[in-house]
Length: 417
View (cartoon, rainbow, N blue to C red):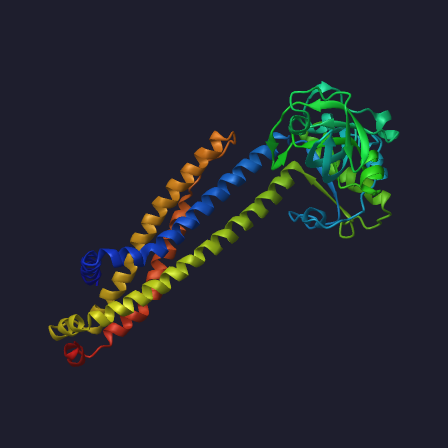
């Protein structure tokens, strides 16, 4: 049996080399499909590694409170762009009370938006981040010029803003922004500070945003009463789980929720570790979904192989008749043509793996040059998947032409012109 397979492979390689152009064009679909799978898996793994490392860099002692309930490791509906109004400023005050949640050292509430900001004739579209004064204590960051807004300014709905470094550059260039007046939604705001450049962390550009006192953002710009997010810093990592429970108890009291099981919660509380698990789940699902779409090109390549093999069977009908006349049986003929199909897909698969790896490496270099800590990842799992799918495509789409060749009668085959 082994000798028959080895002999069939040798015959297959000889047949493929006799028509190099056709062989290359036949395996081109497999090469592209396998390369696409490798590239997507590699880029997905690199992106996932970058996102997770950046989220970790924000701190493991942070917790996030979002409006809308959710199952464990599943994002709440608010993350998916659905507006939920169950989180309020009163909730923020209750959580900030040390009597309710003793292990919190800093809390910040948010309501975010997107709009144009203008100065003189310069117009720029950016993220508007309505926040409380606890932003710097929770998220970090530094004010490069001027100051952050105060609690009094927040209470009084003061029309002041702190610019991210990118926004300052886009609007003012090298000019001094402090004390200048900018317009947002036809309302005038004074610039009281400019943030130090921080770059992109966890898919968020910290420099391309404008900070506005939360109540000013809610009342004067957005016209809402709810919050989009509350983030808080816990004193020590070992107190994170206890703090999450304290926050849940506090919010259930605020929202008159009697059930302590969590089934009726209209909010979600996540630690940094839970957020990492949720991000991993989402990015893995996206990565494999995109890889599956890319793998569809392998099916197209397999159909192309089947068509070419059927043409090859017709062209080599006399050869099949001669082989049968000198003693080859149906199994020998089937193995010959099946081996040719598998050989095409395996060679195409190997070339695709090499091509995909090279392209993935080049992309990782480009990202690193651009300043991202991008990890080059080509896992053995993705290589094994690519090789296995290549072989499977060869077997599936080569089986029909091989079967057809093996069923040819010797006499009829020898008569073929």
